Length: 162
Image (cartoon, rainbow, N blue to C red; front, side, top):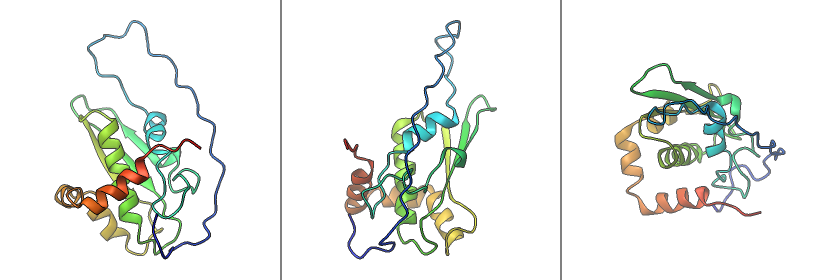
């Protein structure tokens, strides 16, 4: 992971048991877009590993199901917001964590979803700057052209079989 840990002793919480989603409605039109709910988004991001530690974002309480909001009211574009809480107020990995969340969701969900990634209010020293960076398309594209950053993101997104 990363040398020179910012939070050398993070609090590790127990993972919640995975809940089963209800089966799809049998009479639904096969050509209609299937709605994506809060639980499905959480299932996509819960196992992302922290860039500094061998724990998942869920185990460190960086991400929780309650921190995901889905707005599926519009027919052409649906939006959801993922709010995460860094383990320390001065976390230098906050932008990397946000980038990992964005990349995972870009790879997992249909393109009709607009993703808004945010740091929880009052949980980071440079909250406004981090939020601006995480939601700027040009900055995201530039970050994804950096091979070192892409390697770090891929390492965080790699499945763990523990």
